[in-house]
Amino acid sequence: MSREIQELRSQREGENATSTSPEVGASTGYSSEPTPGSTTDDDFDLNEVTVVLKDVLVESQLAVDAFKIFAELFRPQLPILESILLRETYLSQPFLFWTIVVVVSSHLTEGPHVDLYTRLREPYMALLREEALTAPLPLHKIQALLFLCAWPLPIASQVSDPSWLYCGIAIQAARYMGLDREQPLPSVRSMGVLPGTSRARINTWLGCFYVGTSLGLHLGLQPPIDSDIDFTAIHNFLTQKTLPFEIATHVRIQLVVARFTNLLLQNNDTVGSSMIRLINSELDALKSAFPEREPGGLKVEFSILVTKLYFYSLLIAKSPPASSSRDVLLQTGLVAALRIIRISTTPSRTPARLGDRELPPVQRDRSMPKTYYRGLAFATIFLLIFFYLNASATREEQESAGSHISLAQGIFKRCSIDPLDEYSRTAKLFEILARLPPGSSDPTKLRFTHRMGLSVLLHATRIADEARGRPVELVAEGTVSEPVATYQNQPQDQELPQDMLYNMDQTNSDAEFLKGFWDESFMNIFNLDVMYAPEE
Image 1 (tube, rainbow, N blue to C red):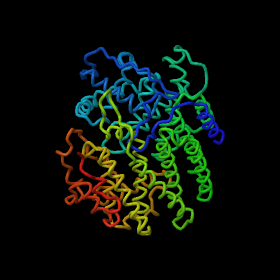
Image 2: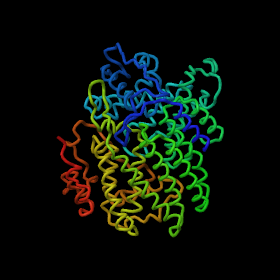
Image 3: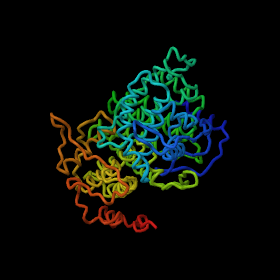
Image 4: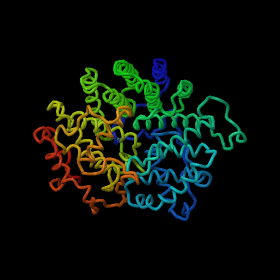
C-alpha cells in the first residue's frame, strides 16, 4: 500500500487541475467541471415527442431532464459511463436508458418526476427481470446494474434490498467479458457482445469493485472481489488514471477494506488490535495524500471514517466486555462517529443546477449514493447503542452523542418526501431508540458478532421493535411485513398508521421537538431557534 500512496502523490504532482472551493458534506455533489479521467461530450437531443416503456408513454422532456440531472449529480459519483448520446442510448440500449430515468426519478422531489417513477416502476421491474438474466450481458447492462446498486429503488424494508444480488450478477458478467484482467479486447464472436472501449472496460470493473466492496462492508459480508491477483489488476488499472483523482481515492479506500476484512473476521482480539493500527495507518496515509483544497476532500474523509468505524465495531463486538482494547476502540469510535455527522451537516457552497434553473438543496442530498446514508445511519446507531443508551457512559458522552443524533435525524427528515419512505423510517428509528431510558441497551450482549456494523444495526432494530411491541422473530409461514411507501407530492396530508406513532403530540416543530427531546440546558448552546428557523 505504501507504493500506492506514493503513486497517489506523484499522480497529483503531474496533474494541473485547478483548485475550486472545497466540496463538502451530504449536500455536496462531485465537481461538474471536466477533470482528468472524465468525459463531458454529451448530446441530450431526443427527437421523439414521447418515449415508451411497455405501453407506458413518457414525455421526452422528462427523460431529457432526468439524464441532465444524472450527468450533473449522479454520474460524477460513479463515472463509469462515457459520453451520453441520448437518442442512441434510447434506441440501442433501452435497459440502460430506462434504468437511468427510473433511478433519477425515484430520487427527485418534484411532482412530475415523482409521478413518473410511480408510473414506470412496474414496467421497469418487468424489464429488469428480463434483461438482468439474459446472457451474455453487454457492458451497458453491467453499468445499468451498478447504477441500480449505488442508487437502489425505494423498498418497504431493508431486507428486501436486492442490491447484493444485482452486484453479484454484474461482477460475474464483467468477469465473463474479461473486464477483470489487462488483456487485448476480445472479439464480438468470442464474447457474443460488443467489448466496449478500453477506458469504459477499466472504469466499469473499478466500479464493480467499488460498489461490491462498499456494499459488502455495510452488510457485514466478505468482499466479492478479494484475491491477490484481483488486487494487482485493480492497482494497475488505477495507475492508468482513467478515473478522477477523488474517485480513484475512494477505490483505494475499498482496497484497504478488501485486503483486511477477511483477516479481521478470522483473528482474535489481540491480533485484531494490531491490524486496526495497520488499517488506521493506511487509511490515514490516503487522507494525507489527498490535497487539502482539492474538491471532495471531506467526502474522502467521511468515507475513511465510516470504514474505520465499521472495523472498530467488529472488534468491539468480538472483544470481552472488560477488555482494555475494547474501551480504547469505543472512545476512538466515538470521535469518528461525531466527526461523520459533523461532516454530513456541512452545507454545500455550490448549488446544483439544471440549465438555468437552480435545483432545491435537498435534491443534491438525495442524489448521494445509498452507501453514504448507510454510513451516516450507522454512525448514529453507534452513538445511540454504545453511548446515549449506555448507562455506563459518562454524562458528557451521552450529551455529546445526543446532540449529534438529533442533527443526523434532521438530515434524514429533510430528505424524506413521504412519511413511510426509507429516510423517514430511519429518522423514526432514531427517535424511538432515543426515547428509551438509559440502560435499555446492553451493548455487551450483541446477538451477532461476525457481521461487522450490521451486528450493531440488527441489535438496534431489535430493541426498537421490542419498544413498539412488534414481533422480532419471523414466523414459519411468512415474514413480518412492513408498510409500503406511496410517494406523494404533499406528504404532510398523509398520516402514519397508528402502530407507527410514538407519542408525538408534543412535537409541533423540529425546534420544539429537539428542545424537549434532548437535554434542554445542553442543547441551548446550539441556538436551535437560529438553526431551525422557519424557511422564508
